[in-house]
Amino acid sequence: MFTKIEDFINQWKMEMDATDRLMAVMTDDSLAQKVAPGHWTLGHLAWHITQTIPEMVARTGLDVAGPSDQDPMPRHADKIRADHHKAADSLLEQVSKNWIDETLLEEDDMFGEQWKRGMTLMVLLNHTIHHRGQMTILMRQAGLKVPGLYGPAREEWEQYGMPIPEY
Image (cartoon, rainbow, N blue to C red; front, side):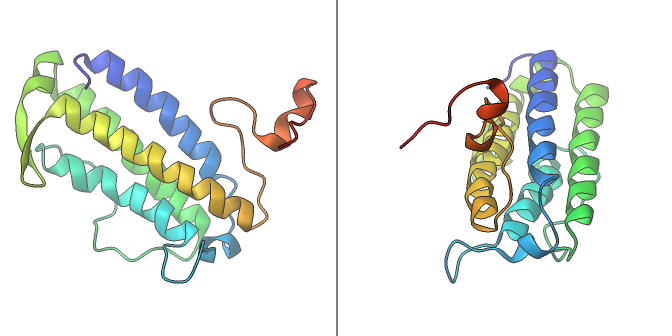
C-alpha cells in the first residue's frame, strides 16, 4: 500500500514506462493473438489495462481521462497505446493535484469492500503488471520481440555480452 504520494508517482512512472515499451511492440495484426480459443486476445488485455485506470480510480472520486469500460477495443495498436498513455498521465495529474499523503489513508467502496486509497493505487499497479505478463506470452506467440522490463529478455542477453541461457 502506498502511504506517500511521491512514492506512488515514482513507481507509477517507472511501471508505465515499462508498459509503454511493451505496448510499443504491438502491431495491428498481433492484437488478435490468443493463447487458446475462448481467451482474451493481446488487444483485449492491453485495452483492459487501459480501461481499468479511469474505471478503478473513479471509485475514489478522481476524474481520470480515458476510455470507459464500455468503449469497444480499437482495431489499431497505436490507438490503444495513445489511450493508455493519456489515462496513465491523467492519473498522475489527478493524484498530484487533488491528493496529499493523508488522502491515501481514506477509504472508498471498491468492489464491495472498503479499500484505502493507497491500496487502490497499489492494486491498480499490480493489475497492470499481472496483465503485462500475460501479454508477453501472447506477443511471443505472435512472433513479436518482447522487450526486457525488469532485466534483459531472452532475445536481449547477447547485446549485454551474455550467452543466451539454455533451458
